[in-house]
Length: 176
Image (cartoon, rainbow, N blue to C red; front, side, top):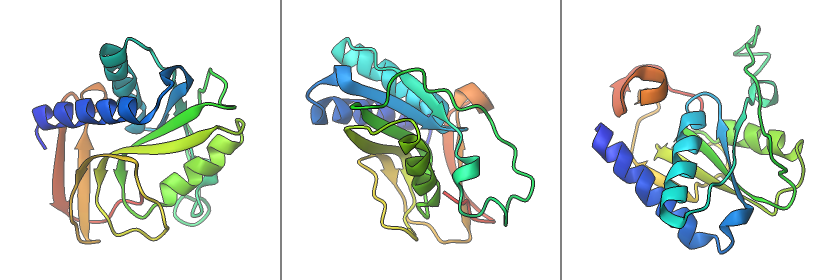
């Protein structure tokens, strides 16, 4: 995906979020660290442009909630989790860059529940690459692509990488 395609996908996703949620005052975005964070911020901004409502944005580090934290990550490095708004009773739009196995999302669902009981949790991902290991489906998808397990989906974002793009490469798979 080019930078323009990423921008168009996020605008469409923000519009779908607005269409699906009657009371946008009750919506909050939570980005899964690392690349879910800027995507959540962009979706909140775009929703504000569309509907004149600025939804709060939080950031979630799921490191200690992963089911492979002791196996694949013997010395895990955690980043901060910052959710400065009440989760209780809100519609939380959980945001990540790539949906793959579903294990990252499962960990994020467990982590969110430690902050309270949301009215609902919806999932927004820029890329859905299939090959799920858990029964998790995204509510909002920027682009669906078919991949092999051996391929890598590389998402670059302006805020982190200096440019927006999505590339499909041969290599080790991501665990998303």
